Length: 295
Image (cartoon, rainbow, N blue to C red; front, side, top):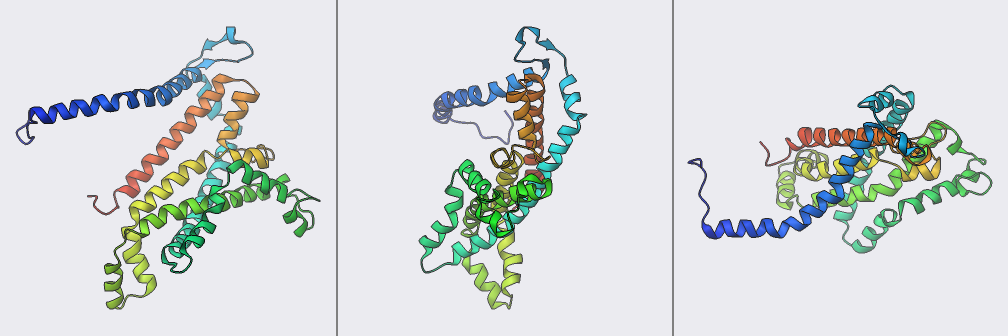
């Protein structure tokens, strides 16, 4: 044992063993629920496995990954996913911060204001997506009728814009909720001191509030970016991936459940998992190091 490390007493070791014993059942269940599907997906991604002909399954190594990464379908879906993720999360961050400030600063009717802002997030995503689909259905939808029976869901650019709009409407309250928690941690004394020193409201926000909110902003951006990159519900309901609006999750779904190609579908799922892990690493590495209390 190193000299700089204090030796645990017998009672402390007993408490540590008890802690491990109490955590073990939950840990085992979590590994079984999350670890096994991941390992099995990796196994299937190395097979040529058509569910219609299970007896013809064959180990092909990394051929499925090569097929996916060399396919224009994958890269088109990847670009669409990136566009939806970057634009929606960026707009949600700005709007979410504005709503968070409103919820945090509201004095009268605070409960009513917060409840009304959070209503869209409380609606099930599929239900919200169907409402947007109905609104843009020509001859029946109220939004479509306002624009001369427009059908934006039948054109790629307009459909992607509608999907982004639906994402922003649905999940901005979630972003605002996380950011409001960060605002609550900013000491009022610092704000008052900066105001006494002559700082304007914008300077107080940029130089006092934002630096202290970096941990909350990291959490909000990380959660929403990972969620947006895996977008499925809105696209599936609004366009079903048609008109080149499919995301990587839609592509994986089509291969797994429509084409019954478990090999290619599992390879796509593993690639999505890797992309999500890279995004999480970059956020934590780049943003987390700048958070207060970090060296």
